Amino acid sequence: LHYLMWFRLDLRVHDNTALAAICERANEDNAQLSAVFFLTPEQWQTHDMSLTQLDHIARTLPILAEKLNRLNIILTVQICPSFTDCIATLSALCEENNISCVMANHEYEGNEIARDEQLTKQLLETDIEFIRWHDQCILPPQSITTNDDSMYQVFTPFYKKWRHTLEVSDIQIHTAPGITNNEKVHLTSSEISANTTQDIEALCNKTVHDYQQYLQTHKSYQHIDTDKQISQARTAYPAGEAEACHRLEHFIADDINNYDVSRDVPSLHATSQLSAYLTIGAISPRLCYLQATKALGELHRNDGDNFDSSDSSDNNDINRWISELAWRDFYRHVLDYKPELIRHQAYKHETDKKINWSYDEDAFAAWCEGKTGVPLVDAAMRCLNTTGFMHNRLRMVTAMFLTKDLLIDWRLGERYFMQQLIDGDFASNNGGWQWSASTGTDSAPYFRIMNPFSQAKTHDFDGIFIKTWLPELKPIPSSILHSEDKMRKALNKNDTFANIDYPVPIVEHKLARQLAIAEFKKE
Ligand code: FAD
Image 1 (cartoon, rainbow, N blue to C red):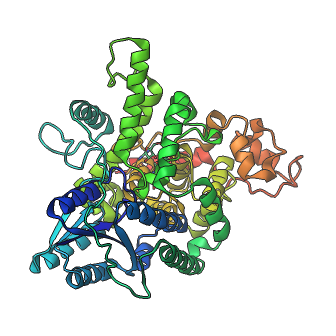
Image 2: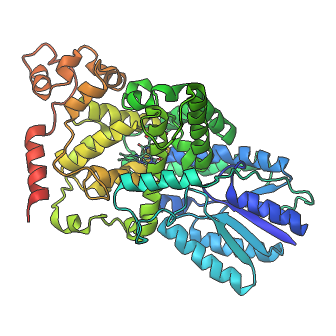
């Protein structure tokens, strides 16, 4: 007997539901076990995967191969340009290697679902089992529903039920046992596949290089120094599950303590910075949840109080962080409930008919390049373009500026974020964009429009973040940076700061706000 573990965006050994299950079954049945991962560059182009994310995957795969080796399992990495190629290649691999069972973890996006459904049918014809496990969420889609069995439209009641369900369930971490009887077969050997850590590294490097070449011809990358972006992301996000787990431990032991307040200050780097790892599955979301609740439990033991972890007054910092993990689950549940979201439809359908979105190319380019004349927006966009990451508060500010101040279609911004973010993830990104554009589930009310100057005053009071990314603004005091009127005046040709090479705001916030509200209000 021979079984196959198909890795997708679940690039870890610890608490990998499918891996643990197939290892157990292989040991029980005395079967051989192989593992495979497909590099799908054409598919990634279609999905707007960022270079930094592909590079992160490429750096993670050799580490995964090493870890699997220690469990006596060989990982084959193979280039399969599209999902259609994956289906054909996987079927052929099964046939050539007499594989009778394939396991993988569920993916919830449209093309991924279609691929898996087609493969299930194809494998069934030759009596090969294809078993998928829920693994990406802490609690799987459809497990948290209202009393009449439908999906929650609003986050808070979802969160209450999610939290309660977790408290009464016994969440387990699945450890994959090593395979006892494995001949370590090489599934295939060809120019487009690799089995040794060294060959995997070489194949991955080549794939990243080719993808970078492709992106350099792409309009969205014309203003990006891709070498710099990759190098920044490599420094900020060393690859591998050990690194991710270490980051989690460090965050829980230390930085979580002031999370509820400092999470909103971009210059502090006070959030976990785990999203890049969660997105490619280098860390388990259940492990994150369990470590956080363990810390809550320890606090309780130290306090000796009656402990109720659902009581948000108990520890605002840890509870707030757990609620962010719940947002991640929430948006995946929403996507599973409304699969049409993947086809660029607004959650609130009526907004697609009603809002006369702008497609102004110059304004969009100014936003992408960080040249809008609004310091916090520009600093955030330049940070994204240079590092592949943007702080959550700034994602909200920049997304709201694009969709409300510029009234540009949220889908353009959503796409641009996917193209740049190291943690680009369809469900969370779509959720965040539709929240900001007031077109989504439980989104910001259309009349509550963030003023990017006041946001800067509240969350970057001393202008530290702004001046890091816009060094040309260093001579300007924050009191001026945080006021649109003062900035316009300061950059005027008669003012002290007139020689600074920085644009005046491309839009007047007060007026833009009124126009956006009118657009949403109209019948
Ligand atoms: P922490 O504050 O430490 O939070 C812990 C984890 O909780 C995160 O790693 C993430 O997995 C999850 N999380 C936190 N906030 C959210 C949220 N609002 N929605 C969903 N999950 C959340 N997150 C992505 O992972 N990928 C995206 O592509 C993405 N796009 C976004 C686009 C917009 C317009 C907005 C407003 C938010 C987006 N987010 C996205 C959510 C959030 O900004 C990031 O998850 C967060 O900034 C990651 O930093 P962290 O790991 O330090 O987060």
